[in-house]
Length: 168
Image (cartoon, rainbow, N blue to C red):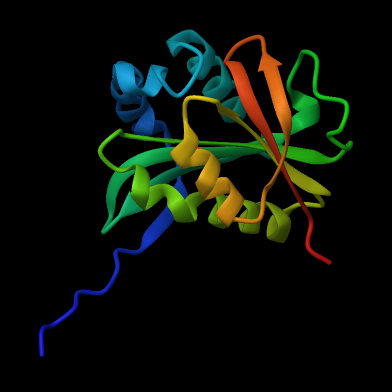
């Protein structure tokens, strides 16, 4: 009988100031830009979360090795026009990874939403995922997020708008 290895466990750990170099290095990768937007818009999103006292900033790890970044923050903290179907009290979630690891990210939207609902009074979690990132959209759908429509985000371009309401 052949031995089967256990699946790799994906974990989220708090991002620290020391992770800044890692995040900047990742942002230089053209595949990250392909997730939507550009380096400047990603840096602005990360800075906004870093400056918020309530935002969740997480490094995605597998076997303690960093493979991606995830964050969640109250949508009201973000400036600009928001889709009207997003209720007040929603937290925006974002996930990205190095291109060699997209399959390992399937668990991340669920882990992030679970932490948001366990630690905040969020009524829902939302995600804007570039239309070029079908793998990530499927990960959000597996986590219970539901597709609402295509939203033309001024920073990231055309994106699927996904929403997950707080479980009862």
